[in-house]
Length: 314
Image (tube, rainbow, N blue to C red; front, side, top):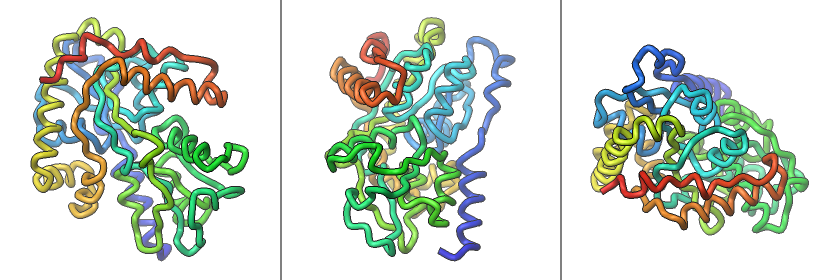
């Protein structure tokens, strides 16, 4: 990639994907009855926002799941959507929340990217190399599972924790050998000369989770249930109308329509049933992080699946 193009893309990432649309700190004046939602520029919540399907709620934009859960901990938002690892790190940080919804698996929408010119043929070729990822995000679990599948450990690679807006220029400028990332950053990075070394197929489900602050779950139960119904209907509409979905979301994402379509084709999934098996799945991930001492001890995330919201979606 030419240096000028790399600079442009870096600016796009920093501005289009890294800012906050609404200031979370300003929501205190909006009143306790307002449902405050944190979202990332992708996933079902972005589609709800782009279509205007939930009038009366307020929206705050976050670059990643860990940043969103920090706002949840601070009480700046009531509800937000993340991947599978952020809830675990949030629980370990004593954030008070419950799990109110879950998406179907989306393993193809997160991947390990490398430069084709480097000649890597498999994930095992990264032994001794520098791998960048966002700490505590969904791709953190993907990295651990790929290491396990290749009979490797964290000590076999040099891990560099970078936020998405930092990871892209580091990858483009060959400051790291591989970048583990999710859509839409993944789709944006699929430039000539970039190779997908591995995705999550067969190693991680890569679900989206809807998290609700514990106080909001009690004080705004009916509002949240109503929103979850809207979320499910909008998600279903998007899956049934992929072309229209891309047309609606591209301006919201500030990404061209073909890139949006490519990312959505592998990332967008229907709402899944929130039940005990989801709790078991998430608990197994939490236990894996604890075993590697990446979180400070065991956390009980299974109990965070809230039955009040299990049947909210039709």
